[in-house]
Amino acid sequence: MRSDVGREEKEVFAAYLVKNHLKRSEQREVILDTFLRSQRHLSVDDLLQLVQKRRSDIGRTTVYRTLKLLQSAGLAQELVLQGQTRFEREYKRQHHDHFICKSCGEIFEFSSAEIERIQDEIAADIGFVIEGHRHQIFGLCRRCASRSPREARGSEAAPLPSRRA
Image (cartoon, rainbow, N blue to C red; front, side, top):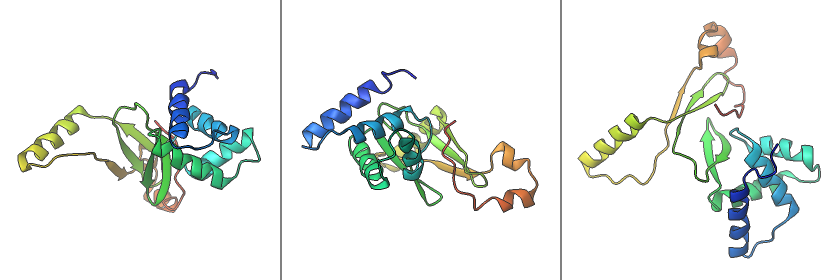
């Protein structure tokens, strides 16, 4: 893997820490680097598992607190999907929405200029000023939809994996 992964984000985080009189630590650097290298929607436990492959001494609380700092610094966005909190990269990312499979938990990102245009038109018609939005569309992915109804129902309670399309 390239060593310059997330170089700009790392600079943003360093500046955020200085501005807020917070300590820059090797643990935070490892967590940030691991988060930036992932292309998935990560829960705290997902990120903890990845981080501990590099540094087994880093605990869940440190990962959680660092994710919250990344969120405050504008580098991560928190998503609550089917009751589970996940984080994804936010810095300079183009707006997107999510399709979430209710059976296997797979997450598919998409963007649609047409949807954005329609909601802007509707908002203008009613005099509503949009400050932000999040579309989360639930259903069945192609793989789960092709399974029998009994198979699909049997896996509904499965925890969400954190893949990003």
